[in-house]
Amino acid sequence: MTADSAPLPIAAGVRARLAQVHPIVPWLLVLLALLPLPLVLPNAYTQYVVNVMAINVILAVGLNIVKGFAGQVTVGHIALMAIGAYASAVLSTKLGLPFWAAMPAAMLVAAAAGAMVGIPSLRLEGAYLALATLGLAESVRIFISGTEWLGAAIGFEGIPPPYLGPWALDSHYAYYYVAMPLALLGLYFSFSILRSDIGRAFKSIREDALAAAASGVNVPKYKVIAFVISALYAGCAGSLQAHMAPGFLHPNNYTITEMITLLLMVVFGGIGHIWGGVIGAILVTIIDDLTRDYYEYRMMMFGAVIVLVVIFMPRGLGGIIDDFLVRRRFNVLRGARQTPRTDVHAA
Amino acid sequence: MLLEVRNLTKSFGGFVAVANVDLDIREGEVRGIIGPNGSGKSTLFNLISGVYKPDAGARVTFDGTDITGHESHAIARRGIARTFQMLRIFQGMSVIENMLVGHHAMIRYGTAAAVIGARKVWHEERRVRAEMLEMLAFIGLADYADMPAGELSGGQRRLLALGRAMAAKPKLLMLDEPGAGLSPTNVDVLMEAVRALQQRFGLTVIIIEHILKLVMETCGTVSVLEHGEKIAEGTPAQIKDDHRVIEAYLGKEMRDDQVRAYLRSA
Image (cartoon, rainbow over the protein chains, first blue to last red):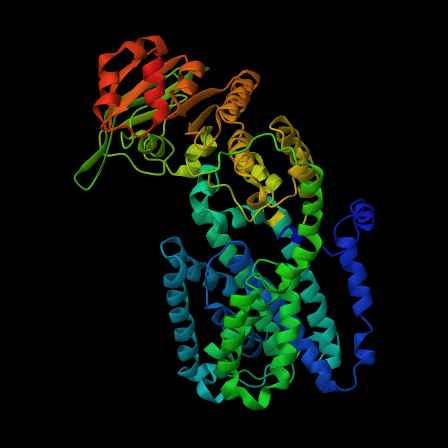
């Protein structure tokens, strides 16, 4: 988890020099590097998959904040995405708001819903919280399926693409320039949070809520903040999904299968590990795309992978990265200093 | 009085863990609280620090403010820091992060500023990090600042738990069995650290301890609990001669051989 404090796994010397500049500078460089990506992609479909990757990165990074940092076991996250998506769709079609206004508004709607999902977390923990959030999520999906003005089970169509002046960003290539920068921005925010007092408050709650409170951390407040921040991410991802060509939403995009897929991204990547979550989101999006024909079996497959990951690499890919980069450093340190100041009796 | 406890009572179901305890802690004193196992010492700490809510009729005043039944984090913010018997350090976080969580109440920037990574957050983080490194140096853990706390040895964890409580810059520090599991030499090291901290920061300290030697040598006044009631209070010398105290320890089944050893030598 300590590797989270570095934005990129890079050499210490380079990192020291980067520390002299504002932390956003590396991100601008990454943005520049990613700009020409559509030029090298073979077709629009590949571009579409890359855009889905960006959306999933936002979703997974957001989920990691509440689940990985704050340690709250929520399995209702996909419903927050649905709320963001449908809010954005309704605001742009029924009220005629442009994407640029509908998306922030949808994020706020999702955040409000996130606060409500967070309230059970003040009383419930672990599996009980998981059940409560799952119940909330399923009721959102069923509500959508049965609500005529949300398209019910037929789906919501005709959601307009974003416009940049006179240009409609309705091709997958153009949409990349909306989704990718937002994903990077989300990542940057996530690192800012983690490296700040807020991130430490989240982690202290995950580690030991009682000790966190004794250190002055207002536990209920920070739990709700974690839920709200991660809901903002989910709302953003949902809105991006809604406005992406062909501008169509269906309640079946938010079933428990999608939730398991989302969980897999975070678990496979490494709970509480930002880069792990990103890699997890990208890999799972690819796997997801390759196995589209086997949708019915996906739950079984992904479920099995989650079980295997939890057993054999409980800290995910991120944990392996940590072991490689961080632990090695401390083993060297410990080898060099074999004289700790105090020691306990062999108990 | 820095801390005034009046009529503090807590029962769990029919079991009375703490009964009508009064306690007055002067500013700058080091108070010891002793008592056999299950005499309500830890419950007393949990009541003062807000982990449990006291039964009706109790009144806890700290630094002139009534804090009876306040939330744990609110009490911490008023200047009461504590350690736990089981330490409860944040094992998945680095050593310096543990310290920074301890310092949480003193960090002044909002959530929004933190999310966007505002410049003032950046500066404030540098400042508090340097400050915490200094405190880590004071307890001898500076070299381990970026190590996951779960990788520390037992003695180092105990020091970190103390450091995390100190990081809050408290007015009152409550230590719950700081010497448990330490070898006699390391108890001395720890007590040296507590004394140094107390003198340097003008702290008021309350120590719960089984190791009587530690309490007798460090504390100006000692309060003795038995069955949740305060049965004696006085200087270590007075306590040693108090027949009720000797009864409380000897009359019960002896658990702590250090208690036995102490009483034999006294």
